[in-house]
Length: 195
Image 1 (spheres, rainbow, N blue to C red):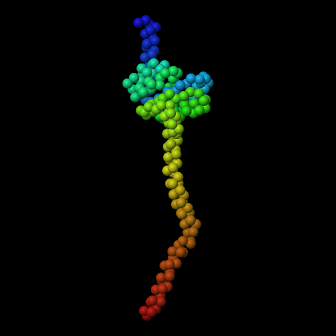
Image 2: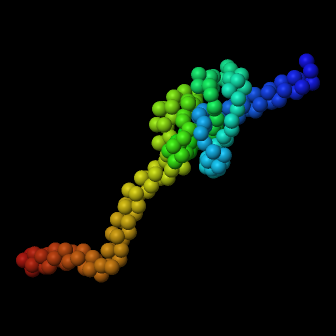
Image 3: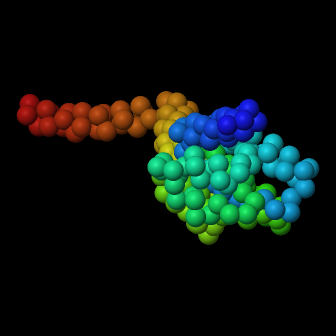
């Protein structure tokens, strides 16, 4: 084996190892057909993906096929033809689909090929559906808002009751004393009758 061939083999193995390493920690890996986008458009999309902690890279299909053999990502082999770019996320499983769907819509270019999200294979239509799921932070914020709304109403109601009692503090005890005085008056004639 010549030095050039050996160097090329080492380089390919390094890329395969890099892909395997990324997939070991990824919650999702999406494959897209990136044909037709300009360098400027690709850079904008990369920036949007980076903001969501999504790793985006173009690898040779043959190297990816070798890297995914025997892994939970092996089903991706069926879509690895033609130009393929890969978006992977360790943090938010739906982030790659969400950001890429927005880029596809904005640019009217590119297309989903397929992806593995939390261990399940999704075709292009499935990824399109997944892209509509809000981020984990958005879902948590909505959930917390839905919990806080009834609690907030309850707290405001209690505060209004307390405020009303505080404002009418003199009137409320007088109303409570009035019934206590009435029985005392009724008791007086009964005592007089006893004498």
